[in-house]
Amino acid sequence: MSTPITESAAEILTTDEIRKAFPALAREHNGFPVAYFDAPGGTQTPRVVVDAVADYLLNHNANTHWEYPTSHETDAIIESARKTFADFLNASANEIVWIRPASTAPAAGIPRVAFAQVAPIVAQRCAVCHSLHPTLTSAAPKGIVLDSASQIRAQASLIKTVAVDTHVMPLSNATQMTDAERKLLGAWIDQGAKTP
Ligand code: HEC
Image 1 (cartoon, rainbow, N blue to C red):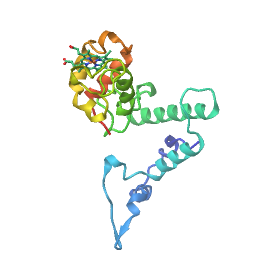
Image 2 (image 1 turned 90 degrees about the horizontal axis):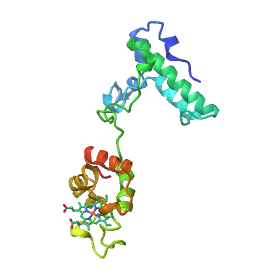
Image 3 (image 1 turned 45 degrees about the horizontal axis):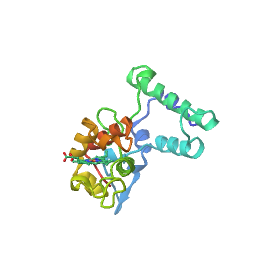
Image 4 (image 1 turned 180 degrees about the vertical axis):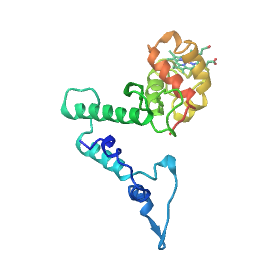
């Protein structure tokens, strides 16, 4: 496991030492020192972070909360990072919650729903009727065809009305759509109905 950062942070580093910790600042272009600032892209990553991430990926990478060593190690690393941040922010460890980087983290902590999660739901629960080649009806009802990403996207707000806000669709819930699926579909639409 990597050395907890708390131990080394006890010493005060000089500006020069701090600069040396950021490999990106050693870059040169045509013989001149240059720095490219794209902070949300994580340009200035200190070596200690690179090393910790590499160490994690190479030696411990696992799901959390399982009964095998790499999973225990993962839990311990996350817990130790919580303590470190709690110390830094003068909070307690159980107040530290990890979300994705700020540029991609949705505001209310609702995980971002990918179209890839939504597509199979629409295919299974809707497109059996709403398709150019439906299997449960002879033709797409009301001309609503939900075969492709762009067709689904184009109908997003109507889909929200009939399958999330109300449950008029699927008709008589013929395809047994679950509430969890409705929620997921609704979250994807709320997040802008983005298709790849
Ligand atoms: C069993 C077949 C069937 C399934 C499955 C089905 N629908 Fe429909 N859908 C219909 C029929 C029939 C109509 C036309 C209802 C009417 O005449 O008002 C319709 C109408 C619609 C309309 C048009 C509503 C309007 O006001 O014009 C939308 C949008 C729609 N469905 C979306 C969906 C979505 C989204 C799903 C999946 C979550 C779905 N449907 C599943 C049969 C189905």
